[in-house]
Length: 562
Image (cartoon, rainbow, N blue to C red; front, side):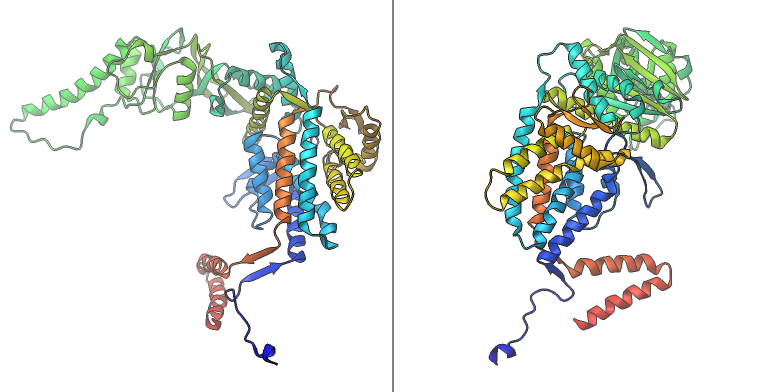
């Protein structure tokens, strides 16, 4: 009786939404599967593109998993984890973003029946972790090294890795053309890791084949004053002066008060201002530089002054471009024109201003340190060029990774099938429930070849049966899906390669994410944040008249009850 009269303990604020247990876990798994379905069709060379229209009216057409995941405004807390692993895969290796989301969702999908049958999620997590270690060791064992090859051989191997990445993108039709361009760009920056040393400039117009690579720096002609047209537009072996100061008359006016006793003294002050700017310009000319670039404005007086002395100048050059010119030409950016010595001047073999489409570009080529490259992209629509830039970013990342971790594995779902076969065999040697869990992990890996077939319109069951049979025979480790015929083919012989680090990273990240989601058994939603959202929405809708009252009414009722 006493037990019945005990008051109810209220631990959390009223209105707190706390869902826990099996149902919560299954709901999280369903949310992650829904996210994966959004990017599922973008996988592989026959993958479809997504058109995303945001609230600002911007339209993005993309095939890149990470880009799509960023643009989807996902609010479900568990599903956000998949967005994070797609981003981490993008920043770490550049490619395989769709793969990592699909794998994580498939691992969860395979775990769902076990969870519903009452298996403890920690047992699943333990088996999944073991399976991922085994899978990664197997990848390392199957990987083929490209170390110790000559430069030409290395170039063709890297171009094949880049072509594999580009084949699933919008510019897949010109993958050979762009693959060799990307390899040259990455080899040009040498051992320097900074990605911003490869500039990508977008010029609408022309077709994709009009794109070209500059072994050096290219940037759009900056805003120029009168006198600019009289400057020479081409130099051979010029010296280049890089500045971070204004060469303008008005900038000399300090915010100071001057009291004059004689009106004639005013002229001397005006003359002093002119003398200061002429003194600066004289020092620039005496340095022997033929090209003067500044991050800040170069005024009309300076432009005319340089034109009279056959010197090219450009003001308001962006910080990034100026740094790339400095890296390429061996110059140093100066914040003063005093004491300009030869060591701080850069040089290049050829400088010219060229018309590209309807833009004029300043191009520095044949740079001594040569640690930078610029790709000028051409194409019809703006969205198309944007997507081409994202695709090239992926390819550049892949080539960099392949250069650093010089091992490659066969693509086209071959490596996934081989690991799947290996894990199935391994599972049979284990007693206990783990056997089932590792088997389900192995089955989940088959999602990659299956999705490749589905996206190309082939019969996935048929192709997967052929692949299983080939891999089980022991000599088909390199066999994957042949997208062109709908059968199976030796991916290695067809040069469908990808760096081993892409697969290792994808399996690692996907397993981590799946284990993280499986380990969550309760979600508590704080009511405060919801009422704050309600008020924000109410204030947004109050401007529309009627809507605000509905929101406020609901908020008020909750308050009275408290």
